[in-house]
Length: 315
Image (cartoon, rainbow, N blue to C red):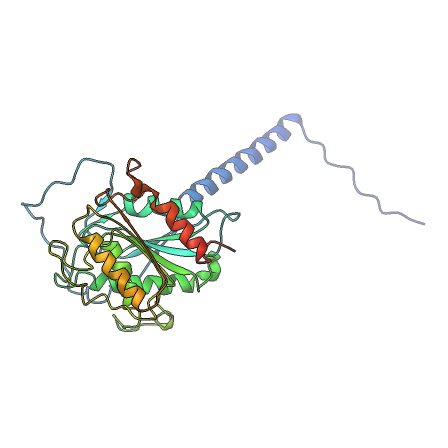
């Protein structure tokens, strides 16, 4: 019987061995740093492949010499958006529950309060297992009469994009909601009440997907009605039995936004749409996840409980 014998192992010097080990260790550390850096940078997707609809002739307005200077605080304000994007924030695999929420920062449809009402909110949503996608929609206002018109196009396309990438992102396409603040709150209401309207010409297969959000969360929403004089709900807020479920938070001392939110809730009740409304006595406007000294700062916990009760935080 014969046997196959392996050749004796090559002999290395101690210096060459340590050199190889050092190179391997350096490569490993460099790769680890690169992976951490890439993980820290959320993915960004363009909402439109070319010029957004209706923006072909858009020119940024010149600076207003009478405009008030931005407050000196830590809020990042984006004054001009001509290329709408989605910024993806994914929860850890352990926490992920398959729900996605598109976050719409506010800013009177003139700027976007990017961190206060965008990225900070995305991080909170990640903490409860929700995939957050922050929408950088077009500002400043293209249409002074209907300032939500261009942003609504961006929002409808954004919802379709999230559904298109649902499998890739570990998201259930039937669990895609929206959350917005102030003008962003108005935008999510417009998205929830105008989802059956074609707001831009279809350009590809993506536009065949549904743009109806599965639920909406307007926080201190603006422009639901006259905010200085009590009156009816804006005719733009078209509630039907197919309007998605709603969670609303607002404060009594925020001009007439509490009244308008209450009127919105009444219309939701009439249409038998599941809804929850919280009107806090104090807190004003523009608090995002901040203002811990006021009871309104509890709205994220209440929203989490509502999402759980609706079945959106379970796997």
